[in-house]
Image (cartoon, rainbow, N blue to C red; front, side, top):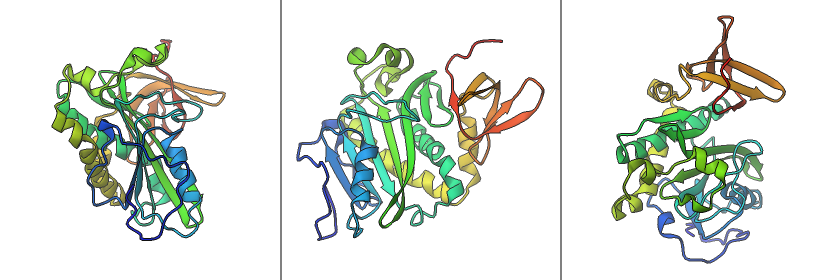
Length: 286
């Protein structure tokens, strides 16, 4: 735990446990504080409680929470995120104004993070086909390797953004639900060999470095970032079925536009820009 402020910040549910080997606190000057937890319900939920209770703004931002195990990892909507000690699991909370992030940037936050993850993992397994499954997953060879959960919430000191990341590095699937084993993979399983000790130690630091770089590009509206997430779009040219509540949209993926919307080419020849919904895996052919 590294708060640089001499005052003692609030510490809800903070356990003084040794940190897991994979979760060693990375060196990154961008972070104002970093918290290591052996176990937590959810890093997003923890950091939200932390900052919602921080009425004096004692925690320097950005602040990161790392854990070796989540009991109730969150996914999009009602989904859950299964992980173990071989999963790099963390949440970074930041002040959007301090990072020059506008409201219209928020739908693109997960995409920018996904690009940062690919920046780091692709060199570790260059033989794989690394892609982004819109709106918030990173895949290798059509298997899910990472998930991202961005959330915006209010605190006594202003609005904050939480960016939750789960990256399967050396995940052991023996105890995972069958539904997870069918569609997920780890960096090491995709690579075919274990990571070297130094590669494991450097992984979190390198990911934070790339995240800072990609968030800076997002704030600058740099065209290279949008070009990169469009290049990595896993749905482009494939049949897509999207559920928006009771509504179902079908068509062919037409890329991810600079606003972060998914282009959907429909049967009547129109192009729809999709900004939300659940993309079904293996949609039925019609």
